[in-house]
Length: 102
Image (cartoon, rainbow, N blue to C red; front, side, top):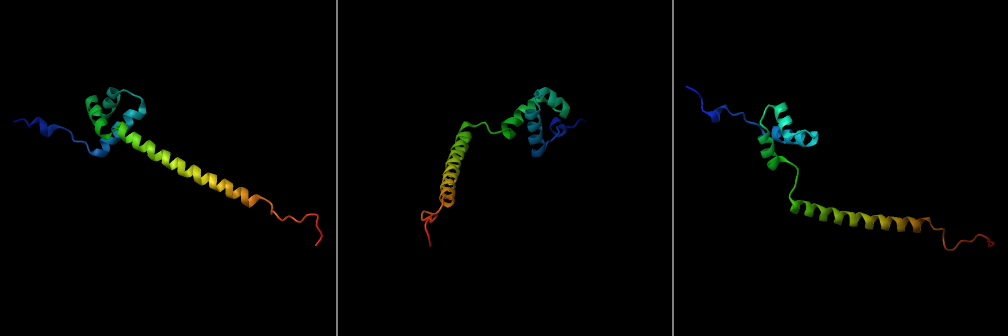
């Protein structure tokens, strides 16, 4: 008696799936080529990319861009404050007494 097809399927853990998708996307190779290297069907890579691929949701990207813009504004303000402080510290004292006698 043959075992059911369901039991013969290979199971892949999440780490393997993430690494396979990362390898595929970073290698520049086709899904078919990477699938052949890893011994699996290319359609699995396409499926896994939906779950484990890079963020492609525009809502997530917008939120990240806004957070980065706020951080940039904060850091720019800090830099400007430091520049002004350095300028004040570097100025010679206003009551410079060069030429006057003690």
